[in-house]
Length: 571
Image (cartoon, rainbow, N blue to C red; front, side):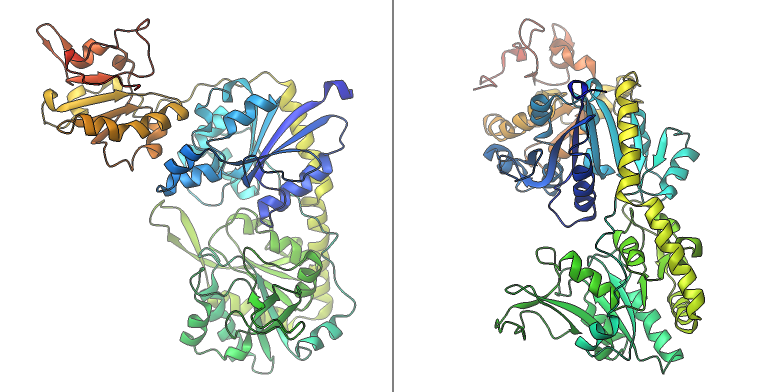
């Protein structure tokens, strides 16, 4: 393959300068492929604003919209804000400008909601590299699998579950982890003395403070471990954001479980001099002992974290790493901890199955099932007794046995998670997909799309046709968004009519919070005929007025409206 025949790949994920798991993976992949003779890279960066100079060596587009009309539209809708954050409103424009040979989307699955209905999707080779972390696998995963050319998942747990559903063209590709910065330090004793921890057994957990990280379970397991091992002088180091209101109220749970506050540590970072300190929690905005900044110290948070070098030091303060969670896509800190020379305890569910066994450098934590109310997903509640048991095992373990498990972990991550191997497999996949015939499997019709067989009267309330007005706008996202902004004017003009909107139900989230819409009904090809909708002669219709703004008078008689319309819809 010569430079003239490079494959142009648009990689769409978290912005490569963000410190998230997806962002770090993006950075590692992009830097590795940047000078590849066979690949031309373009980045579509979630978390960065459209039109911003993003200072990357490759071409890069921010995906958060800058259009004021769109920003106004999404302002009061969480669903639309989320869609905007994943690039829903800008990706079409980026695709038109870049004209990629391959689109590679690297995000959680819901980031691609409605992408497969965009015009470019079936014209462009598509690879989805996603995280599926819970059972049962949703129908949306099966659907997007059937409509993309290749699906990659971050954990073998997900590959196995998808294949059990008959989705054979799924492979596990772990996120790329840079291990150059994570390794055992020789001066651990001096490092511990800096924070008066030289005689302590340190249990560590590095995480974003969110509810799927099982903080109460870990605190309970730690309490039981302390009770059984009174001479351990154990400390629990929670490298996370402690500010109340962010996620778990950690100080509250420490008090509730009657744990000595001196035994649970946090990481403070100075906003001014970037020094970090490990200490018991004293609140936020404290005086920095290094530079004297009066309110410089805060716990680690999403806008201010430690450097990779400092994070490696924090891992090296620990004797064991413990990562209890409900589910996860890969859990990057687990691999970083292994690189830093730690034995890792991980919940034996979801992606934890790839990290928690002795040949992987870890020990499994048992769990009990509970169901997430909104999705009915199976989630793991990590057993505090298992946390206590495995911590005790590590504490009492002979050093030779511990070293053997730690060495297993180092070898395992270098084989399964290293940048070189991950990028090599990814490149091979890109080339294979590029050279294959475009997949054009039709989407299985949804119940809404099967609405042709549903009686029209089943879709309508019983207010009578003279009190109904219908707007038909089947697609696309831009058209639906534009029409949504006109509906208030329609209601002002026809205040006594209930406004119905008919659309492809894929776009439901773009309309369902509009207070002027009486009801949203699924689109049917029958709605292309205004005489079916409004009636003709002796045949009574279902609506007094039906607007079809997506059509023209050359296609249908879209100007009829029973002679009752008062406005030009497009005015």
